[in-house]
Image (cartoon, rainbow, N blue to C red; front, side):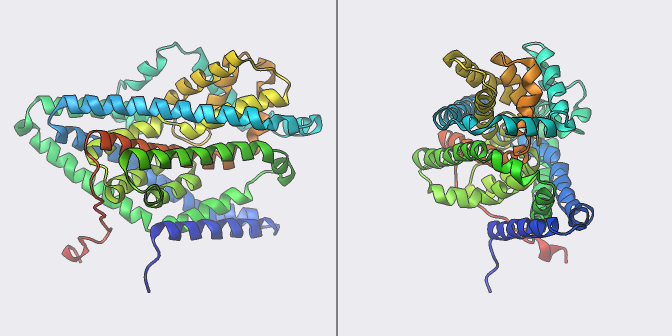
Length: 441
């Protein structure tokens, strides 16, 4: 019997997890059982992925740069990557604003629902923490994001996945310096990072053996911790607009892949689907990064010289799904609370969401911090910010899962586009976890 492909295994695990979660919500002890005995398995899986994210960035980026032999090639890759990410983010925000203005989901929210949502969530610790973090970011200077990119202690930066940009900065600095001392002197260090890269990728293969079981645990945990169904239903129109926009972005990516790289878009979506499913389950681009890199390099054929830079940078600054969500959420909140937006306000949303996405952490919940910054940029009343966040807090987690899928798909798309532009898009070379098993058994 032929073994099911990985994406089918993960999808089956997700579906079983959702059904199991719903069943557990019907019994008095179900939520406690899932939280105590099921969800920890998913948490361990996410921790394992985050565990190897920084070593993978360090090893793969040093290997990618040191293999270039020419710094000008790295400059070309860098400029094309940043430029393409900016374009896709602007497209995402524009799609979101067009949909929310045409479909007007805020008109379906009555005062009773607003009051109920406010009473339920306005004082929630999750909402207040987002407001505090947004206030901290707003009070920082205009060039603070550049300051934050440069670490004062490389080892300290490597202990925190939220400081991924600092790790990327140090790694690029290290890789370029290795090029400048000459191939002979750099060889011992290059050999070390080459071997480390191979080892970490093998760790990805081993961790992925548990993926179907892990997503079962993660989805079961999400279901049993979901909000009041009545509140979710009240926000269905808003959530539908966000999901429609995210689907249009997936279609946009598939179209770009077909037109620019001449690859079959359906083949692309199939090969990247394990990373998409994990992004949905974990709501974290950073946690999904090791799997995204493995799928893009081995299953799609993007050269490591490109993927090792494009994907870590994308996981940090490319938030297409999150930016689209912010555009929709900002206008939806304004519609629901009677705050009139001018055309200038909506242009401000585009610019602010673009800039905010660059400094956003690749972790669950970062989108709401960015949303507060976007709302403040258009003059939204400060005393109503908590109410605005409370309006959408009930559905933020499931939408966070959906927009992370788009973020990861966008990273993979841009890596293919950049690779094609520098003639670094080749044939897939899939490696299995047991390729060298005979040598050690």
